Every structure is written in C-alpha cells, then in structure tokens.
Image: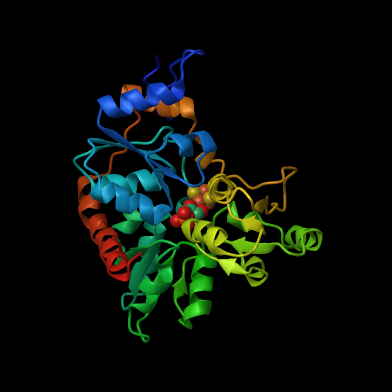
Amino acid sequence: MQRNQSIGYIDAPVPKDLDLKVAVDMLRKAKNAVILAHYYQTGDIQDIADYVGDSLALAQWAAKTKADIIILCGVHFMGETAKILCPDKKVLVPDLNAGCSLADSCPARDFAKFVKQHPDHVVISYVNTTAAVKAMTDVVVTSTNARQIVESFPEDTKIIFGPDRNLGNYINSITGRNMLLWDGACHVHEQFSLEKILNLKKQYPDAEVITHPECKQPIIQVSGFVGSTAALLKHTITSDKKQFIVATESGVIHEMRKKSPDKEFIPAPPNDSTCACNECNFMRLNTIEKLYNCLKFELPEIFVDEEVQKKAIKPIKKMLEISEKLGL
Ligand code: 13P
Ligand code: SF4
C-alpha cells in the first residue's frame, strides 16, 4: 500500500474479485461516512453515492450531515467547501489531483489585487474558487442561485463577479446588471462547438439544446434552456420534449437517462476533439477503486488553513441562508 499523498491518491491494489459496491457499502456503514457525488462523476460512483447533486446541493448536504467522514466525489474546491463548512469532520476526496481549470484561472494573489483596485464593490464569487478566494468574498454563489443572489443586492450596487466570465456575462444579460467580471473560464464548457451543435440540430430537428451557463454566449443563444446541472436535469424530467442536445459535461446524462429512460440525450460535441462527448478530465480522475481505497485508508484528506476557513465560511453560509429563504 502506498500512502504517498504526493501522487494525490492511495495507490493500493484492489482485489480483482472484490465486489466494490458491497465493500464500499460495508466500509461506509462501519465508519459512519457519507458519500456525496457530483453529476459529473462516472455512473458507477453516482450509483454508489448516498447523494448525487450539483455544487449547491453538495454544500447543503455537507452542512447538515451527521456523518463523521465526508467523501466528496467531485473536484478539490467541492471538498474544500465541505471542509470549510465542517472543520471538525474528516473530508476526503478520492483523488486530490481533481482540480478545476476555472478555479485555477483565478489565483488568490491576483484576485486580491483586483478586489483592492475596486474597494467600493461587493465581491460575489462562484463556488468554483479556492478557499483563499472565498476568504476575500462577500457572498458565494452557484449556478443554481447566482441570478437570485445578484438580484438580492440593490440595482445600483457595484459588484465584482468572479471567476467565470461566461456565467458573469449570462447573469449580466438576464438581470440587466453591469457586474465587473474576472476573466476566467472552464476548459470543458468553453470547448463546445457551435457549428457541431447546429449540425446536430439539423440531424435532430425536434431536439432542444440545453446548456450550462459556463458555456460561451453563442451556445447560450441557440439554447432552449440554460441552467445548473440540477436545473438541466429537472428540465429534462418536466419538459414534453423527447430529445435533448446536452451542452455540459456528459456525466450528467447518466442521471438524465435514469430519470427519463424514454428520452434521448445527445452529448454536445467539443471543438477540438475526436470524441463525441465532453468530459472534465479532473472530475474523471476519481474512480470507484480510488473511492474504495479512500474510504478504507481515510486518505487523502482535505485541509484548509484555519484563518482562511474562518473567513471563507461567512460567504458560504450567507449563500446557504439566502438559498434556504428562496427555497433552493
Ligand atoms: P453545477 O453547480 O451546475 O453542478 O456546476 C458545477 C461545475 O463545476 C460546472 O462545471
Ligand atoms: Fe471545473 Fe469545468 Fe471541471 Fe466544472 S467542468 S469542475 S468548472 S474544470
């Protein structure tokens, strides 16, 4: 067994004949652990998790769990958010290398300079940020509540919004605000090809394009529905449409198919790839084997500096309070 955290995960052999579903279940019960998974995880991880949800739901579940150990099957900032909310619990992520290009596009030192240059601005940060960025934020948002939280400020409020320029532009366009945007983006959502989506529309004329707001504006403009992963999923369940072209990470299609087996889901293709779907290479670093080892050895663990944690919990709690009032 290798306990070397520098490689980011526990590299211990998993017996080939082990029923991982049963083994994970036994360990989770014995250790009073809860497994929270994002919709972009592989289907086997989603199926074994106690809860599967979007970034807001993951934070909400972490905040209220009675478990001693939280295993966050998602990316690093999701684990950090859980640790900030539950500093006394053990928070684990199956592979610590599961980062986020959007969070990486906003280094804390540079963001601090930007904030300092605009002292009269309220700072609203997307949850896809490091704990250090959250620590200099007034309120955190996710794609489920960004519109409502921005609108909860008086119209003349000067706002810095970071780090996603596409989400920021989208929120500006639907609220009529003029927030000052940090110039960051997600490598997965920036990749979708308008041309290929329009070709798919010709092939499937009845299909609706449904899109995550981290996508670029031209993709949003040809979409019938725009929303967070949870909102997209809900829309596919309630809509009368039978076919959807899904412009977000293709992992969410697993739950869409489970909830609506009679409907067809077509992954929107990226610009620069031979593959037909679009996957977040960070999210896909977590595997069921790494999840098993993570639970077994209680490693690798997420840590957040105490001073940073004390500051970062305030804007996250503010988001949770506003979301609760809004029934989100
Ligand atoms: P959601 O909060 O909509 O699930 O989005 C998380 C994310 O990382 C999108 O790329
Ligand atoms: Fe980050 Fe993009 Fe992956 Fe979401 S899909 S976790 S924003 S890199």
